[in-house]
Image (cartoon, rainbow, N blue to C red; front, side, top):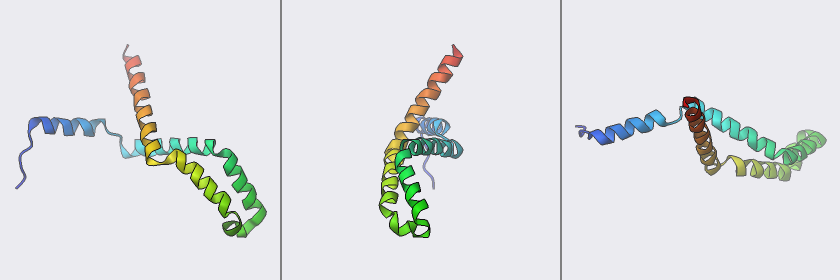
Length: 103
């Protein structure tokens, strides 16, 4: 049998679910963060692309170091910690925009 939930717990649960991001919005945020990471890692990406063009099918073996460098660069901008920071920044921006529109 399920235990009854007190009123404050129910209100807090409803409020947090109402204020949370939808899956679609969260996916869009991840895509925005990914685009930012790709822009910041452009030089590393170009080096990998040049290596890939030069080596054709052997890219997997001959460009391993470039691939690792690219993955490391992208990871430093797209890890979970960076995503949380970006999400909080976007929440603040949206809150400020909404507040400005109400004035």
